[in-house]
Image (cartoon, rainbow, N blue to C red; front, top):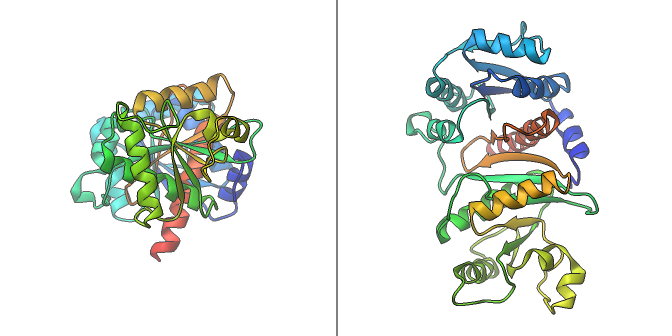
Length: 306
């Protein structure tokens, strides 16, 4: 089981490079990250966007793109659609978001004509290495689903479990986070948490162990769980931290990154290929980790579909 970003990088380097389309690639930090992944033989890049601007941004980053394929499509929507088309035709194995709004690239990925849609919702999973813990945490959803309904939450759990499986965690423990660890009729999140756990016990959500509701402390700290008398099998041992809404997820993942100095990767799941998604302010190393995790997931999906 992969437990750190170093192990993640080594695993991604251990298999042949995959072709990755970078949609709207004219951004120096993105190109710096792509170059790190290229130098580590993780991916072979296909840059899509305004060619002149891509070359200008590459020069700013000190990245040589002469040997990389560049598809000159200045319009951002068209560039994203080209990336999705290449993925649908099997010419690339993963997509990375460049300098473009997430909504634009997601709209392209969801277009029926490209054949990338699957059942269930798309969702973002952040993988974080946090000092003092012996495992990666998977936080979801901090980027796409604003206020997910129950069916969307089911899809979000399944997407997160797929990522954990790809990284070798065969039965991840999923903590459904709320403000409290007890069911409260006035807090719908706690009712959803109990229902998700029930579905898991009944075998309707497989490949994981789901517990909840949990407050954050008793999801990740065995001492806090014991102090509060929380005896659930997930208590203090959570791998997946499922948040109630996008505000909670965004605050949690960014506080871990900026206050806790966690190392972070992020990927969108729910389509037939992973989409590497990072914040524009994220360091190039973090973007490289994101490319690495997307490659591992793509390899896993490719093996299962072979």
